[in-house]
Image (cartoon, rainbow, N blue to C red; front, side):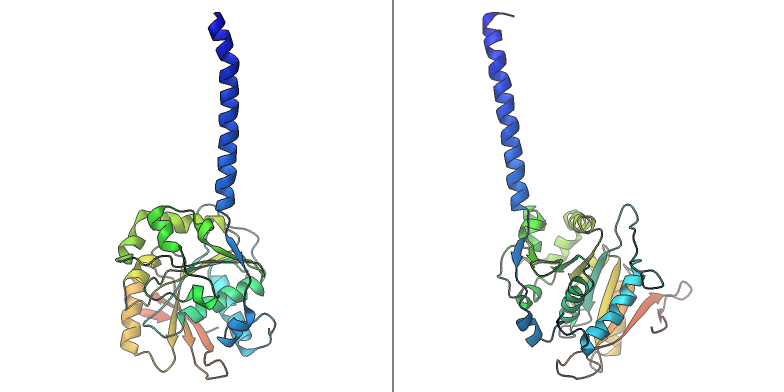
Length: 299
């Protein structure tokens, strides 16, 4: 080794050391940026909108939500028959992705999605992620008083880490991912590989919790049917005495074609102070023989 080579060796070592430090700093910066923004849940606002309030666990809404949650968690394998929480998760794909949709607008799907997320996170302390995938008519972010900004669509089109665009509640294990900037042809966006990868990433990151996706109505757009392919359970919200049966049947056909795990929530059965309540939670599936919808027994 000549004199020049001897002099260069320490300099190369220092350069490698500096590059290693820079890499660590960059990684730390990315990690900090990928953390969700924190926010305070405005319970007074949610209470005015008729949503679940953890300070009133004896309300009719809270009790109805318990019935819905119990059935949902059993179907997902989250509860034992005795009602005890399961202590395991199967390796690979997690059974924790739930899509919430309806036949048409105004039936209360967002009301249902928000209430389930609040109840599970604040009463049962289940780590819950709520995603607004109703891009044309988003409502989730507004319910929590969050500012409009980048969200789901930006994760899919710009490959932005979802955690950096999410909002994490200070009051409990609840994370909100807003709809993001408006996009055309959202069904094509959701049908892409990036969407499946994103939902798998969120599902895996929240393996001990649940992920709810508030989708557009099934008959208004094809988005719900596209997203239904990726989830483990579909909650189909029907407004009592309002939604025509042929429309319900058509919407169910669309969903059952891609996912056999469709359950029904009947909303606004009783007109109370909030104007909304849940009556039943039934399972809909196709018979292997004739392909017809077949409701299971009521709980």
